[in-house]
Structure formats: structure tokens, C-alpha cells
Length: 170
Image (cartoon, rainbow, N blue to C red):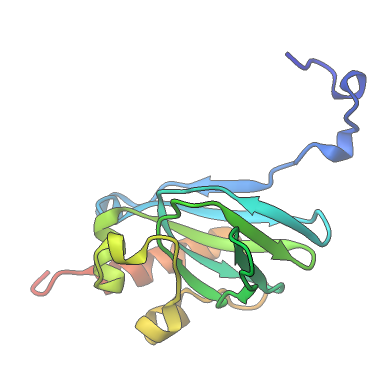
């Protein structure tokens, strides 16, 4: 167990401070949304491994573009859309951001993912789609406004999702 990071070769600045902030969804969205997340991390330009992840999500990047490259030989880097709908990842790949990673995200259940994209999960394995191409009004509603705080965005995003996911006749 690490009691003092300085005694184990780590400086205080090497330890992530509040990199991820997570909020639960309102009860009425619990069948479609698992969480709202804010990531703010600046490790400088670097290539990282993106590990397999079976969760579905919508990820919205603020200032830096994010790139993915599959692990196979001759794979090319692909720039991801600003408002990206991530399917489950079964294979690891590489990710790259030129600097600070600041993003808001929405964790989705399989049901919520299917209701948003209309496709079954097996067709979206290891794929990232542009939410703007699928539902432009939802992508626009989820886009953070300027210097909007995570708390304000979380409330506004929940309201937009509630309206979008509402069943006819509700």
C-alpha cells in the first residue's frame, strides 16, 4: 500500500487530482443512462492504449481533437467527431490527444444506446459514430455552451435526453 507517494517515486503532481467527476442520472433516465462524467486531464501530447470497454457512451470533446488507431499493422489514425457515440470496444487500440483532454460524457445502457442509434450493439463493436450524423438536434442539444460548468451541462443534458427518450404518449 502506498502511504506517501513521494517515498515511492511519485511526486504529488504525478497523481491525478479529480480527473473524473461522475454524477448519477435522474431516476427517470436510469433505464437508458448510467452516468454523466466530466474528464479534465492534461498530460501533454501522448499516445495511450484504449483498452476494451463494453460500455456505451456519448463523449463530447471541448478543445482538442481525439484520434484513434486500431492496433493492427498499417492501421491509420482517424480523427473522432466532436460529439461521438462510442460502441463497445472488444479490441484495444491507440488514442491520441495533442494536449489537455477535457470532455463531458454520458454513459448509456444497451437500451439507451439502441434507442439513440437505432442499431443493435453487435453492429457497433469497435466503432465510433458521429452523433451529428445520426441525430443532429440531440448532438446540438448536448454540446456544451462556451465555458458552461459540468453541473449546468449535466442538468441541461439530462433535460435534453429526457425529451429525446420520451415515449410517445408520455
